[in-house]
Image 1 (cartoon, rainbow, N blue to C red):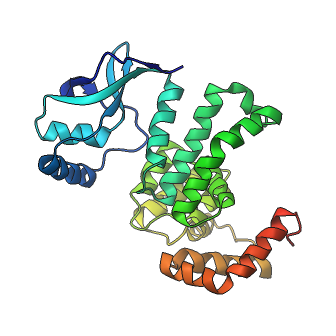
Image 2 (cartoon, one colour):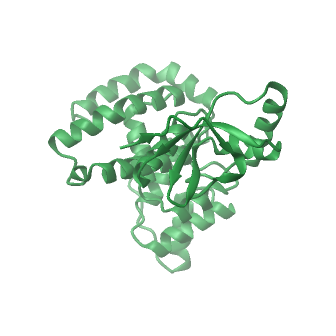
Length: 279
C-alpha cells in the first residue's frame, strides 16, 4: 500500500534520482518546460518515491530536469513509500493520462500496466476468470475509454493496442522509438505474431533503421534472406492487407472523412462482431 509522507513538502533537486523509467526524458520537452518555468515560475508538485537507498522521481522527471537546468535548489513535491509494482503503475498512469503518446508508447505502457496489476494481484494471472476479470475490467474500462476518445478509436482497439505491446521487450521498445517513421498498430500486431526471437530482433532492427516500410515487409525480407518462400496470400488476406495499409498511411483528417462516409456501415459491422456474427 502506498504510504504518503505528508510532513515533506519539498526536497533538494540534486538529491532526487531518476532511474528505471519506461521512457527517457525528452530534451525538447525539458527545453519547453525551462522556458515556461523561467517565464511563469514553477507550478504544481512532482511525486517522489522514498527508498532505502534514496529518493527517486515517480511523476515529474521532465519538471525535475528543467529545475536542475535552471539551477533551482529545491522543488515542491509529494513523497511516498511504495512497492516496485505500485511505482510502475504511478509512472504508467501519469504518462497514459498525458496527451503526447504514440501508438507504440501506448501499446508498451498499457502492457506494462497490466503486468504491474498482475504483480499487485497475482490471482489475476490465472486466465483472469470470474471476480478477477471483473475487477480488471472495472479498473481498466475508464482508462480504455479515455484513450479511445483521445485517439478517436474504439475501446476494442485499445485492448488490441495493449495486446500488441505485451509482445515487446524493453530492447524492442527503445529501438522502435528511434525508427524514422511512426510505428503503426498493424506493425505491432505483425511483430506480435513472430515466434522466433531472432526474427523479431531482425524485424525490429529493420524498422528502427528505416530499412523496411512495415513489419510485414521486414518479415518478407527476413524470409527471403533465409531462402524461405512466403506462403501465398489468400484473396481475403490480400484485401485485408490493402485495407490496413491504406488506413495506416492515412492521416487523421482522411480517417475522419472516411468515417463520415462509411461510419454507419462500420458501426453496423461492429454490432455484428459484438454478437459473434462476423464472417
